[in-house]
Length: 394
Ligand SMILES: Cc1ncc(COP(=O)(O)O)c(C=O)c1O
Image (cartoon, rainbow, N blue to C red; front, side):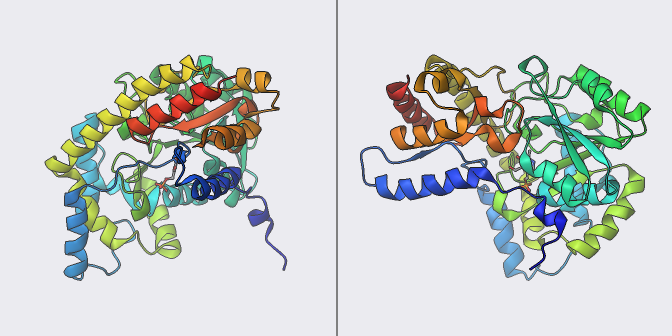
């Protein structure tokens, strides 16, 4: 069968190999005194809180299960607009918000609406692998620009200027980032947006982890700086609704009819049941629960990062959000005589029964030196993981 080139260009998720091996080993060691601890998972260990689940049940019982408008339920768009006002002090009118099937659909819609075949999009290395694949599925080219700890593993304005070429269409940033949990410094972001605007480009900011910010210096949306930004968001992370497949995007008003047309054709709408359920996310009781969970993520980070460092796995930049730790494992690799983090991930899995994610999927520049730990796991599991890492530390 002849496969389209655009499909061939999408690389496999190497982490799935690690995840599959971890699942196999987990079965073998399930009854041992050291069952598998999974620190490779990129989703909250919490699930949707009670009011959200009840709202979903009510929607199903009441038969509220037919298509909605492609742009989403009006009350949900209004509730998201209210969330920007309440949480970020921003005026983001509901008419600029389109509800989507997760951030993933929002990113696809943004790329299909704005990227021509051959356009280049600058993004940081390391970054979330699907983001470069959304660009290539739209027949654009993702240009990965190596970043450093000094720039919080994010692009700098100087790099955007240097790498801007005749085919550059814009930038795709994620703040806080997966895999590093670090955000762009707001002043640097201001400068990046100025560079993009001066060149007539686009800025897509993936803000899916913004709700899980642990530091006021970084916890603001790029929309506060520039209302031309296309901001991607989701109910997956802060709102703990990964499998419900619900997200949204905020865009300049003139883009809404374009995205609406694409969404009508490609998706018809996001899940109706999930949309009704999501309305309950903004109830005071739900928000109180989400804030307790956000505090739990921060508590885990505050314990886990120094603990990792104490076993010789330093985290060059303290994550200010999300639930990841991007740890430099080069000293471990050297001492164990391993070529890089890919081999080390298997070694840690086999020896310590701790599943982790090697850097490989997230870029090419320096990723063989890094391992991503997810702290979307109980403190008890994190303690156990560190105990085992300490025992095998070279
Ligand atoms: C940075 C980033 N963007 C987008 C997504 C996709 O999220 P969603 O579940 O909303 O499609 C993820 C999921 O892990 C992510 O880490």
